[in-house]
Length: 160
Image 1 (tube, rainbow, N blue to C red):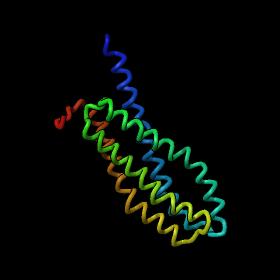
Image 2: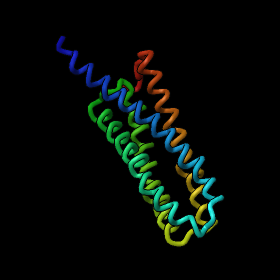
Image 3: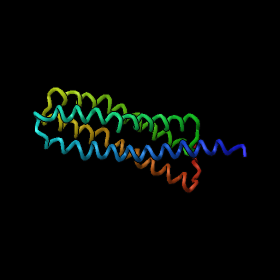
């Protein structure tokens, strides 16, 4: 009976992590792989107002959930809640990389697009996403899927 609260919180943290992880993957795909390429269809004179309005909404829909996912990943690592510590550490590192790449590479390009939009900047945004962030997102997606699978079938982590 003593383990019930511990089991509840462990299950709650893992469930929250998986929920926000798959939400974020969908959000990232829609924003980066669907929206970015359609921006090339928006006339440059209309782009700044569209882009600034979109950016306001993206913080809530994109950045806050990504920060929550990173926080949950680190809580799971620190508390050793996941039976698969190595996978959990790798997912946390992927999230840190995605956040860093977003803030250090993508955000400065977005800022330039608000003041002086150009097709070259849009292409740079798309290409930097595809070269730097997309591979990490795909790795994170598969690591999270493997982690979920292992938790569902109770595979022990042989590295710990």
